[in-house]
Image (cartoon, rainbow, N blue to C red; front, side, top):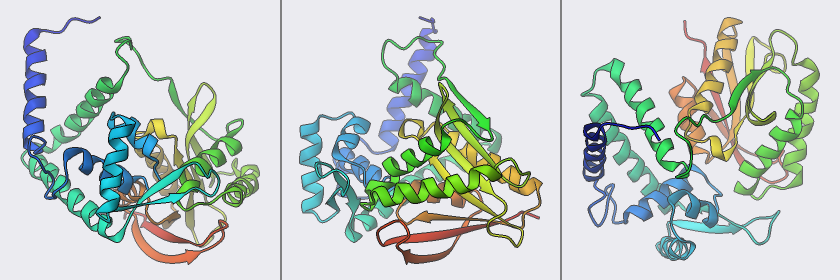
Length: 317
């Protein structure tokens, strides 16, 4: 175990206590709502990950299943959330926000956003990213099992181009991550697989490419630029997906940046992408990188009617 000075440890502990106070976690209710801290965290998880299950929330919030069960019943009784039985697994229920819940989520999100921006506005611009990276690393270290060695490094690599087994890996991730959100089953996975099978023989052309996060040879995150299928000098961003355990590690930003750099280097005027409404974490990432919502409509190509969204990014001049 590495040895750190007592003063460093004390400074970090003091800063952590101050963060808890500044965020208002010592109050009975927080984030401008009448919800408890656990209620606010549950609302954020459901809002950012529509279709998440009670078991997944229990794991993320590190709370007992019985505690989560009572919490979710309370939120449901308030009209904040609703539970929908999965079409593919009748034993599983996905959680989503109601219209009332979406309003509460927006209030919580705006509260946290304002708090972070207020602090960042008082910090030198060059330090802001350093703080973000340091906080992410510290949070990740806290979340590791106690026996994790100090020199542990996740065995993730980012590879370019075709990877063996990537069609199955990526289609499976889409089905597991998005399929239960709207109750889609085998049709959804088949459409994704067929579209990827059509694209893969073209992946070697200069205007096309894929980037994948690999773990022991398996694809656990990926993004693709198809520079051919839309025409009119428009790049199509496709199959952007991350395994659940990669969330919060910054790898989504890494993949998206590689796709944007590829498209800009080839001189595409625009990048278009289609996604499902309700994937708020993805939407935030897109908007932070220059994408704007251009269109919203109901489609049924996935086997069930869902609201799809089209985002467009115009190449910076």
